[in-house]
Image 1: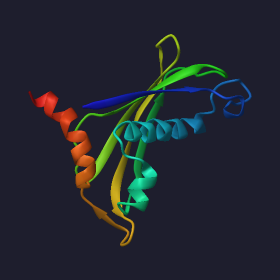
Image 2: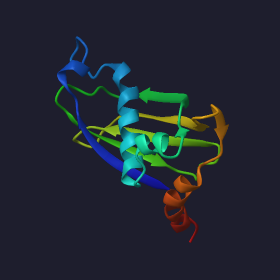
Image 3: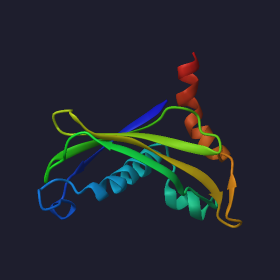
Image 4: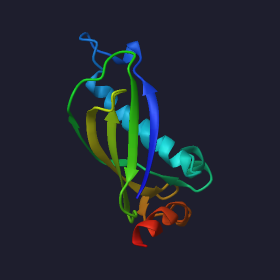
Length: 140
Protein backbone atom coordinates (compact mmCIF):
# COMPACT_ATOMS: atom_id res chain seq x y z
CA UNK A 1 0.00 0.00 0.00
CA UNK A 2 1.13 3.52 -0.68
CA UNK A 3 -0.43 6.62 0.82
CA UNK A 4 0.35 10.31 0.69
CA UNK A 5 -0.96 13.30 2.62
CA UNK A 6 -1.44 16.72 1.07
CA UNK A 7 -2.74 19.80 2.84
CA UNK A 8 -5.15 22.24 1.23
CA UNK A 9 -6.85 25.27 2.74
CA UNK A 10 -10.51 25.90 1.86
CA UNK A 11 -10.73 29.12 -0.13
CA UNK A 12 -13.65 31.54 0.05
CA UNK A 13 -14.59 30.92 -3.60
CA UNK A 14 -14.93 27.18 -2.89
CA UNK A 15 -17.70 27.63 -0.32
CA UNK A 16 -21.45 27.83 -0.61
CA UNK A 17 -23.92 30.23 0.99
CA UNK A 18 -23.70 28.32 4.29
CA UNK A 19 -19.91 28.74 4.44
CA UNK A 20 -19.39 25.03 3.78
CA UNK A 21 -16.97 23.68 1.21
CA UNK A 22 -19.34 23.27 -1.76
CA UNK A 23 -20.00 19.57 -2.40
CA UNK A 24 -18.97 19.87 -6.06
CA UNK A 25 -15.46 20.87 -5.01
CA UNK A 26 -14.72 17.50 -3.42
CA UNK A 27 -14.02 15.86 -6.80
CA UNK A 28 -11.37 18.53 -7.40
CA UNK A 29 -9.87 17.83 -3.97
CA UNK A 30 -9.72 14.14 -4.89
CA UNK A 31 -7.87 15.12 -8.06
CA UNK A 32 -5.44 17.28 -6.11
CA UNK A 33 -4.77 14.34 -3.79
CA UNK A 34 -4.07 11.83 -6.56
CA UNK A 35 -1.99 14.22 -8.69
CA UNK A 36 0.18 15.10 -5.69
CA UNK A 37 0.43 11.44 -4.67
CA UNK A 38 1.67 10.53 -8.15
CA UNK A 39 4.09 13.47 -8.04
CA UNK A 40 5.45 12.16 -4.71
CA UNK A 41 6.34 8.95 -6.59
CA UNK A 42 8.16 10.94 -9.28
CA UNK A 43 5.32 10.68 -11.81
CA UNK A 44 3.97 13.94 -13.20
CA UNK A 45 0.68 13.81 -15.09
CA UNK A 46 2.15 16.11 -17.75
CA UNK A 47 5.03 13.66 -18.34
CA UNK A 48 2.62 10.75 -18.26
CA UNK A 49 0.79 12.23 -21.22
CA UNK A 50 3.59 14.02 -23.09
CA UNK A 51 6.47 11.56 -22.67
CA UNK A 52 4.71 8.24 -22.16
CA UNK A 53 1.57 8.82 -24.23
CA UNK A 54 -0.72 7.57 -21.44
CA UNK A 55 -3.85 9.22 -20.09
CA UNK A 56 -5.82 8.23 -17.00
CA UNK A 57 -9.53 8.98 -17.35
CA UNK A 58 -11.87 8.55 -14.39
CA UNK A 59 -14.28 5.62 -14.76
CA UNK A 60 -16.03 5.87 -11.38
CA UNK A 61 -16.20 8.11 -8.36
CA UNK A 62 -17.79 7.32 -5.02
CA UNK A 63 -17.86 9.51 -1.94
CA UNK A 64 -19.67 9.99 1.29
CA UNK A 65 -20.06 13.20 3.21
CA UNK A 66 -19.58 12.83 6.97
CA UNK A 67 -19.37 16.44 8.18
CA UNK A 68 -18.80 19.80 6.49
CA UNK A 69 -15.53 21.56 5.83
CA UNK A 70 -15.54 25.33 6.38
CA UNK A 71 -13.94 28.37 4.82
CA UNK A 72 -10.25 28.80 5.79
CA UNK A 73 -9.94 25.33 7.36
CA UNK A 74 -6.70 23.52 6.62
CA UNK A 75 -7.65 20.08 5.34
CA UNK A 76 -5.53 16.99 4.92
CA UNK A 77 -6.24 14.95 1.81
CA UNK A 78 -4.95 11.41 2.37
CA UNK A 79 -4.78 9.43 -0.86
CA UNK A 80 -3.91 5.73 -0.88
CA UNK A 81 -3.49 2.95 -3.39
CA UNK A 82 -4.25 -0.22 -1.43
CA UNK A 83 -3.60 -2.82 -4.14
CA UNK A 84 -1.25 -3.01 -7.08
CA UNK A 85 -3.08 -1.70 -10.15
CA UNK A 86 -3.74 -3.80 -13.23
CA UNK A 87 -6.00 -2.35 -15.96
CA UNK A 88 -7.40 0.03 -13.35
CA UNK A 89 -5.99 2.05 -10.48
CA UNK A 90 -8.17 2.91 -7.49
CA UNK A 91 -7.32 5.81 -5.24
CA UNK A 92 -8.92 5.71 -1.77
CA UNK A 93 -9.37 9.20 -0.32
CA UNK A 94 -10.02 10.58 3.16
CA UNK A 95 -10.34 14.28 3.86
CA UNK A 96 -9.84 15.36 7.46
CA UNK A 97 -9.97 18.71 9.24
CA UNK A 98 -7.28 20.21 11.48
CA UNK A 99 -8.67 18.28 14.47
CA UNK A 100 -8.23 15.04 12.52
CA UNK A 101 -11.97 14.48 12.17
CA UNK A 102 -13.12 12.68 9.04
CA UNK A 103 -15.13 14.98 6.75
CA UNK A 104 -15.34 12.99 3.53
CA UNK A 105 -14.21 9.60 2.26
CA UNK A 106 -14.44 7.78 -1.02
CA UNK A 107 -12.65 6.34 -3.98
CA UNK A 108 -11.93 7.18 -7.57
CA UNK A 109 -11.14 4.54 -10.16
CA UNK A 110 -9.21 5.32 -13.33
CA UNK A 111 -8.04 3.29 -16.30
CA UNK A 112 -4.98 3.68 -18.50
CA UNK A 113 -5.51 4.83 -22.09
CA UNK A 114 -2.92 5.06 -24.83
CA UNK A 115 -3.15 8.62 -26.10
CA UNK A 116 -2.40 7.76 -29.75
CA UNK A 117 -4.99 4.98 -30.11
CA UNK A 118 -7.51 5.94 -27.40
CA UNK A 119 -7.46 2.26 -26.34
CA UNK A 120 -7.20 0.99 -22.80
CA UNK A 121 -3.87 -0.55 -21.83
CA UNK A 122 -2.59 -2.40 -18.76
CA UNK A 123 -0.64 -0.67 -15.99
CA UNK A 124 2.40 0.95 -17.64
CA UNK A 125 5.70 -0.60 -16.53
CA UNK A 126 7.18 2.70 -15.31
CA UNK A 127 4.26 3.19 -12.90
CA UNK A 128 4.52 -0.41 -11.72
CA UNK A 129 8.23 0.13 -11.00
CA UNK A 130 7.45 3.18 -8.84
CA UNK A 131 4.70 1.40 -6.88
CA UNK A 132 6.27 -2.08 -6.55
CA UNK A 133 8.55 -1.32 -3.56
CA UNK A 134 5.53 -0.18 -1.52
CA UNK A 135 3.69 -3.40 -2.18
CA UNK A 136 6.71 -5.66 -1.66
CA UNK A 137 6.91 -4.43 1.97
CA UNK A 138 3.34 -5.62 2.57
CA UNK A 139 4.20 -9.13 1.35
CA UNK A 140 7.25 -9.50 3.65
